[in-house]
Image (cartoon, rainbow, N blue to C red):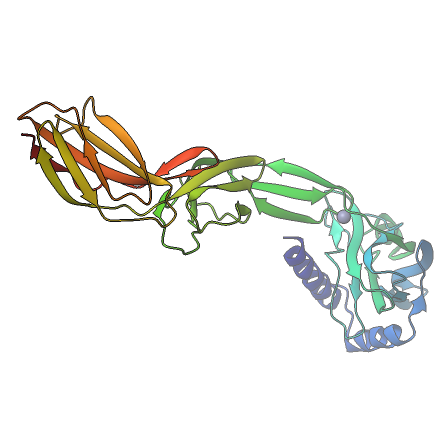
Length: 356
Ligand SMILES: [Zn+2]
């Protein structure tokens, strides 16, 4: 914001200088000369210089622009102040500015035009150690009280260079926070981070296949917008059967999510009925498995089902003590114990059979 304001202000000042103050091309030529003969100014130093405007003893005098040369002792922010001017009596902005350029003539400061609100002329620039910079100071006593009374005015103006540290104060609005330096009025804005109201993993259960698993984290803020997460950390491993944590931090919020890798399932290859018993056979599935869980019930929905656990190398089981001539439903799944916790595959297809 300030940068645009500055360009505009200098543009205006130049137009005013040319049109209303009657400075011609010769004046610009002398300004160029002034860069070449610019007086040096050091850090924490103040230089006084005289600016004139108007007619005295039939001579028209106009000295509006002075140049100083500054070599930055360290890389950092510097403040350039123009003080000692008189304000105009017509209520218009004081015709004063300070502009810092590099040796190619490119402006490097944040805007050193006269600021009506703060009633100051201050430029702040981030400079590089050892580089030479030119300070163009401009002031016209035109329309000051002295000028109005005498038709001529002369002012001693002070130019100073000091180190500058931004002191930001923040003003928060619903979507944006504005930061403004209390000392130089430099400002910038940042979009407010909204808090996360909904967060989850795109997938929370995988079947073991020996490959690394890294499910994406999906998060929405309170406004319902997808949040771009940059601080997500996954537990190591993530290939074998197990439970894995995913931790997320965003602003002041932190989240712990988790997903599982479960063993591959197996399937029943045959069920045979006997007298008050049945014999079950299944396909061996020993990869990442501790054993099998077999469930049987007279209910298709496996209500009040009984569960038998067997080791992973076993592939058949006879279940005894059943009711005679009764239809039974059976199913099987693999499981692995990881850190004392059973992680099971999905169930096999259900088979049914009538006992003898
Ligand atoms: Zn500042």
